[in-house]
Length: 67
Image 1: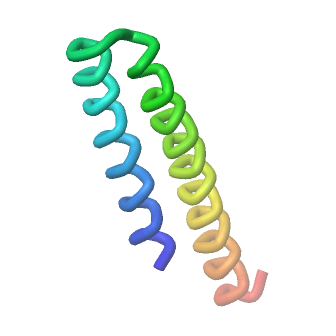
Image 2: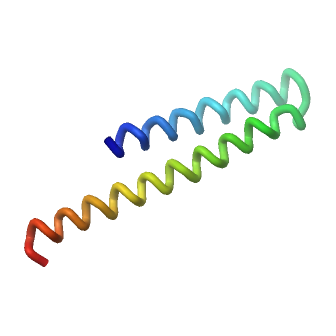
């Protein structure tokens, strides 16, 4: 389940990044700035989810080995 959420947040980050570039070119940079904020937030959540998944997998591996 966490891998799906990881991919979701990565997709949101990429889509919002490219839309921010489009919005900056089509309108102005200030209009695209909000979209770039969404890119930063979704990138942060992606990194958070990824580190959480890695930590959980490592913890599960340690428990299965009896450590």
